[in-house]
Length: 340
Length: 113
Image (cartoon, rainbow over all chains, first blue to last red; front, side):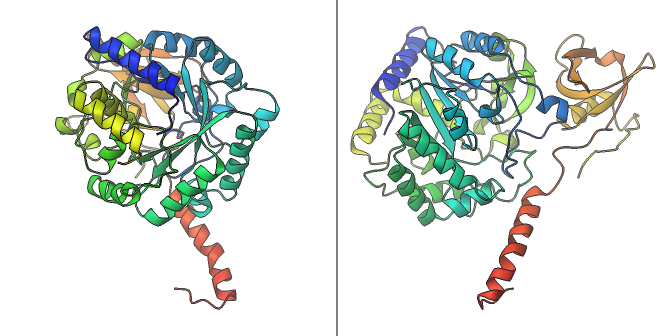
């Protein structure tokens, strides 16, 4: 696993503090969406289908920081939309670094090289560019519905690495993914020099145009078992090994929908990053007045039935690590040996 | 299927609360006909029927807002704006890729379906 020690320590001490305080529900990663506008229109994405006046809107830096302070999570993920299209992204990142938040700036990297050349960012242990890569050139360009994006993303990754930035990749796998090609893709990313990779099955957004290619649960575990059962020594994943074992069907977890709360121009999204069932005006309102019992697989909610996405289950895996000696031991063993 | 262009007829089989739920789920602008006879065009991003006075929240067509409108102030909602979630972009993409690949496969002597 490739999460730097300082980040692991920050997350571990945060989770232990929550447990010592007796908090049953606590956020782990704030999903901060400053805008919905994007320079791609991927078939698997349900995030950007809005009328023009909504796509033109974006959060102020002040509103973002207020949400960060309200939430208190040690990690802030900035998806969107495409965050490099957010005019104040440099200032936002600077402020988050000052607050010692670990930042995953989730980007398709089309604008990455340009923004780096403009000096929008400075390298920091708190900042990682999390580049969206859904496979090798052919698979990635198909997933994002535009040719040439893979090559531009690779250029962006190289430039970021050259300038001393932390770079990870995030990959969504859909039905029909070839395990062999995915393994080749992992090799390729590690050869590029990325710090680590994140991988997750897709979620069947009701608003995404492509409804036929999302993975169902059994297919998900079958696919990930084949891909990850014999991981290469050089592969590094920037996520909990217990979550990866869950994807392989070795663990049965329930969703933690409050683990990755989402804030955007509409407010605090209920109940999670993927489902959009309303908005709360404050983080406290979200945590206290959402009917959490209606979500997760055991609730019987159809929309949750097949979901195994990281934003719901990685928080469960992390919580598991600190809930028992066994969870802790399993995490340490997988981290040290690289075996899943 | 899209609701674009739909003007609901409220009655026993279709309540205002149901139409509000559909408007909340709709990824386009709608026209809110108010009980006072005025109309507001905008995007419904939230609705809350658990409050003593249920309400919706919208951004208007110019992006101003959010504005809160009580259920009791709404006469009907018309689905007048373009449904931005409707379409077949995946199918269109695949079809285009297939068209692009077809001449290459033919020129290289490969069989095409």
